[in-house]
Image 1 (spheres, rainbow, N blue to C red):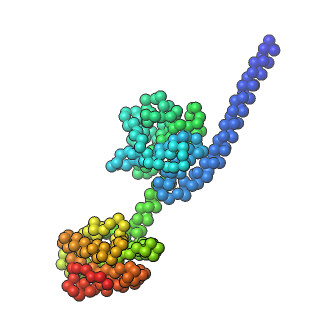
Image 2: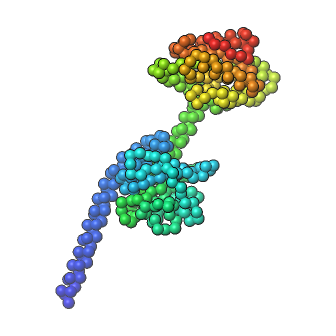
Length: 346
């Protein structure tokens, strides 16, 4: 009787020792994982560009978290949901072509609607978000105060079944990424407000000057030529005096919109001050610059806007920003002296 009891106790003790050893091994794994995650979390926390935050998050999901695939789905009120970036066990974050299942009960649909911040499931379940789900998956919404920033999808983990502490780390990763992305978006908005004219949306004087300096530095390296253009609304004071400042603001906005339409993606457009605007036109030959300025002048007239324009070439007329401003300003006043509503070159 005593022998049987001792055997049972020894067996129970042996089972408990095995469990303790497994728990110790798992604790060591968690400790190593947390140490590695510290670096990944630190990189995410200091990253300012949203796309870079996404890339860091997907890499952390692969190593050290152990998922073989990660997909970031972008979300928005107008565009809905779109698979944007994917990491699939390589060093490259690539655009994703995955199409999620958004039928009733889908884990991604629930995350999109805000019904479930996190869902864990198996490939065999009906709520599986992708046709080729690997093993078990995790869907985690990246939420902030204004709604859902995106959805993180992970699958193909090296472990056979999900463990609670691993799921918790995914939740922590998504939460940190959401905070960092929110900060990045706020930083971009703040930077945009600091560099844009509030009335017209064009580059303000300071931002234009900075980009002008950068553009000229690049031109000195490549040998490219550019044309610096100043535009002044003719008789703007009379417009304000006759029709009011509200109408004057509308005229300035129309000029800004016309300049933006007439310019190309490689050009810079800014509001210099009051009713004065500036444009930097990139081109390869002097005659190209003249043709571009002529088009801007014609587009302004076609929009019913009377403007005088002065232009100066880099490096023919000046090789630094202050000299270009002086040369273009002289050309502008030459246009006004000749009857306004046209253009002149230095």
